[in-house]
Image (cartoon, rainbow, N blue to C red; front, top):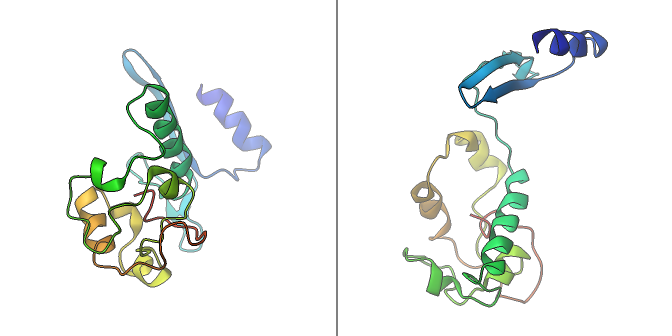
Length: 155
């Protein structure tokens, strides 16, 4: 495995940043970290690097929701208040799953550059952390009123 990866690095002049890991039923059989998690600061990647994958996770969230719909456990018309048992503060309790997935829910947006610079998102590890950022925010608009790309809805 190492030989294959070394050849890949050679062919690409070492221009690969990431972690390659191969596992079997016995656990990790090969692992190699290469490159930088932040090229500007030349911060290297190691086996414990946490990568901020950001909106890539929306695909997996959407697929998980579709699977729950297929199994009859969820519907696109289901309302947030019937599913989420947390205090949602200023978030409209009648927002539907469809509106969350299509960015038409209107809930306040917690993510912005200033916040990201102060609190790097790769350190945000649990729902309680996100809820305290989202629930106090006033709505941006009424559900279904318009489209506005949102991280809050997927959270």
